[in-house]
Length: 530
Ligand code: NOJ
Image 1 (tube, rainbow, N blue to C red):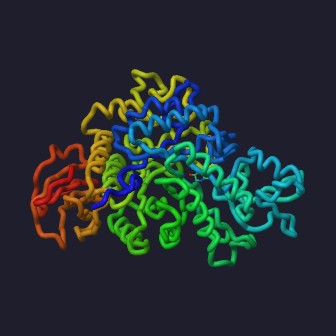
Image 2: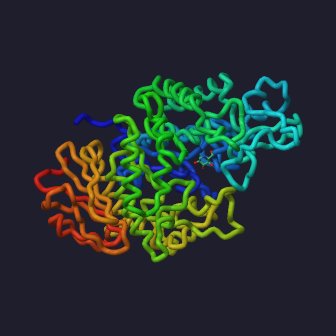
Image 3: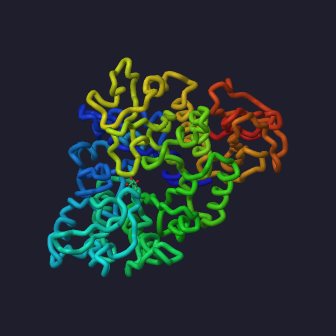
């Protein structure tokens, strides 16, 4: 087997910089803090780190409102520090992805300030301006992605027209129909690739293609405000051509569409995305048949060379340990099983900071709410050290954290978990090491097996290994009832259940999985590659 490209080999770890580590005591995470914790990333064996936006921003959407695409916000540090971080990461064999936000800028970006200054300004057409409807309301029925915002249009008194914003009014949509906008955004891509950045996560990619006629959504069987063909794909192909001016770079799209047919379209032809975040997967219930159906559907729909990117958490969604909790405390076990699931599926696993600690959502009292769309709980700062030792900032900050930390920081913090071989952190580190050393996991074939109700089981073959992964999604024990695989001896490489004891040899027909336990087995007669 030939060695896969770097972005297929192992985990991409998402850092939400505001909440990772604070190096200057102002309560907000920054690049200095991040640079002091790179050992944490190395110990997880991650291939790459993706940083949510660190660019100058008024922070109306915590960095997803960019006021300068080619600099670093002083809250996070300086461009020099970002260069230093990239060099540090590269020195450890870790690639760096930045978050590129092409659909919209901040309303404080000089481009928008010029655009809104007058109808005659040369940059007027860099954003989407329209007259209101005859009844005096917004130009059409498009709504903001954020329910609390309402219409996707804001009236601007100064020039008497409305501007489009798919998110908050502080995030006006750029007009990608204008070739000058496209060219300016390509320059941003080149700016970062010239600095040695290895890839970009493309924010809200589905929004780059809109009906140029701005027709209403109502009464139509398709959305006009996103995923508009063919412009969405033509635009993406041109972006890919810019990325391909550089060797070995990668584009990961946030393609927030809940239909896999539409998602795989953005991976087609080998000239669009390298990977697409798949939100169909993220929205699945804790159900074996549902996971199998979605993975198999992806494999059926996508071209053979299309590469999956599996993830179950990011800064916009309730955390795995909370979302999958059945109300009886199953969340932590399910978060551990989810980590194995992501590591052992064919595709690149994406891991959101804190999921390696099995963090739940934090409780946010009403007077501490800061996000317009209810996403504060999953953005709580990481607890690094026990508050009993490091103070209430739990090693995240010496100041007042911008959001409250999780309640169990004492037990869940990284320092405690690193010292405990049975912890979630220790498990996720072992998973990272296994993936890093296994050609079979990185690029082997994949086949699901019928394993009885509630059990998701799949084979990975290739390289010098034959691995079987199994996840019990039931709240009771389940034996493996494998069809299509003769009974065999297997070695348990790893179990997600802290009570499982030392790995050892088992006969497949006798293996009983505990509730929410996942295992990775090496089938007899094959050697796990180094
Ligand atoms: C997706 C980002 O992940 C989210 O945090 C942000 O609010 C929107 N895009 C708008 O940029």
